[in-house]
Length: 435
Image 1 (cartoon, rainbow, N blue to C red):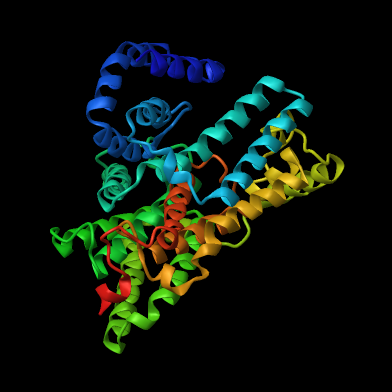
Image 2 (cartoon, rainbow, N blue to C red):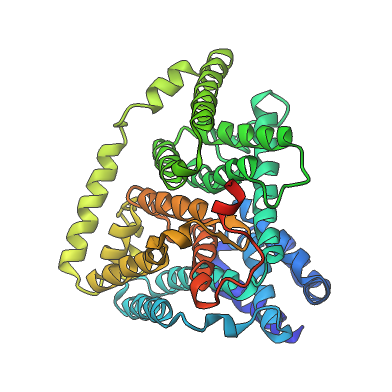
């Protein structure tokens, strides 16, 4: 309890200037720390489920999920629920992570605003830590089921609120802001991409169920429709493109398992989805707004392009960057690209290492037998398709502090153990399930 209390206190101290107006809720958290510690010790798995669900509640930082993960990490290690032995045979990826962390911290030294830059760097390290949490926690398909179940459950709760707002029951400007769905997150451009892994998981479960064998198919279809509604009503061009790319990759990975009849069924589902969206737009009067948002270029894109040019120039002028979080400090505008942000803030070498790190997560799946497997119950093709989609999404938005991105990277990382451990998990290969 003492260690966890110190950890939460330290985390709050780092984020002190962002906690204005949250004194009462945070006091409640501090007073509840003994109960939370007890729950984490006695009901660790349930708290992991809760943490995954709370990834959808990020209005301010630190978010509830941040405090919970900060609590679960030390308790999990001390109680053995997080097993450090699971980091074996990952030297290359670990090395890339720690080089990236070192370069990030080193660039703080050149930042104009040292405190703000330090905080940004620590948040980056924390987000990467989410991937480590997943890697250390998951040992069976039951463990993965809690993570996936919590994440999907939280998404559906958030989308339930969005739906209630769309039909006029929920108060305006909370889960839908300026006509765009954002759930309980800060930005529709984050909310929609976070829904895409949920959509792929539901599609795969509808086709070849693993976690949802006992659930009626109609419930899975309804959940999928709700998620599609969320992605569409976010009116995020990047998220729409991400969805198309992700579905295309998933289809390419699994096309050989589909019979001609099943392929025709897929086409009918695509047509029905498109028709449903058209009908929804007509009934909701969103046709004009959709036409505006569907334009390739928006009025504010000129500002984004200018910010990206500035970030490019900053990276050329400053070999080790200008410091974490400094690309949008003062009069600067955020570059809206995780790669340009990394280039400008922590330097060219840091960008190279970051790109190598992304490749290190994905490259092991070049083995067809691996991508045809289940990673503790989740289709590897779902994980790879969604990961690539999120990485491409990072070209036009900063994904470095997306909690769901690093949760996904942790799940992808788990798949690396398929060959090194001989695939001891009882999950069956997709080829067997599809047969």
